[in-house]
Image (cartoon, rainbow, N blue to C red):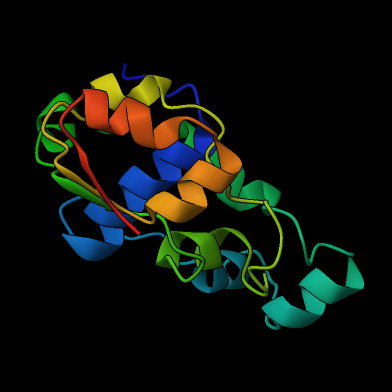
Length: 145
């Protein structure tokens, strides 16, 4: 089992594979997931329960338990760290992108994506993780701001 240490880094990888490349299937859809549990109005559910600035438990459980085969991890050549990443919106559907909810806190998981060549969102990564750009450069990973 491939174990990620940083949940938010895993989300970047999931975003690439599930919503970008579409090689990790099926794609998780929070609204569909909640409708299956009887929640028709996801926004109202979130607001009524004060969950605007959190990762919904259902999404956290799904993505934490999600197995990503090493063969798929080896296909990851680019990652995007952007507030508009689809995976973020599936985790926190009415998140406004104005806090650190999805900030990557560690780059220990870089070994899990051995063919990573490009990390877009380097400026934001450096804000949340000082020294990150040097770590990427030491691994010959180009950081685009």
